[in-house]
Length: 216
Image (cartoon, rainbow, N blue to C red; front, top):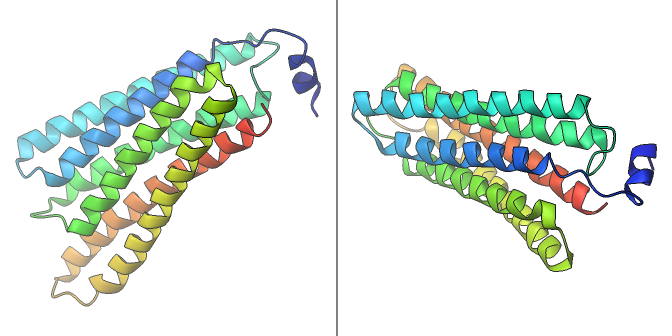
């Protein structure tokens, strides 16, 4: 047990990090919903507008991460392990970056239509983001029942990630059997890969949260 963790048993918990996590989660959920809209949008002007909104969320998330560092440097005792406070904020920032990467692929590859499997992957990313918002809304007020619910939400995120793993594998195997041009194959492979990377990043967050919950 670290010295920081030991002293936390005897002092009131510092709560100023929780609103920052909640703000990060809000940006993530909004960006994930906008990404889902992008996959079904065909109007180029609307696509560019949605991409800009996602970029605004990503920029806002970067500012929240900067605020994390400011608070961390000025705080002696953190609500849970100091390194985990930092890692969790970084992981959430990475998830938001991956959503922005996905939006960039959708915009620049100019898809005429997106396959249903890719839409489902985007749905799962959006559902996982909604779960994160619910987790961080209650993290400050942890008790036995809330803890059980947060563990359930983390497990649900892992299930969504597993579903996207299967969709990714099946999509890649079918992609080269379709009557697509080489350019179209590359475009679709780029999108399914970035969606897979995005899903992996939220799974890492849920794993970290479950690890933190097991120590609280």
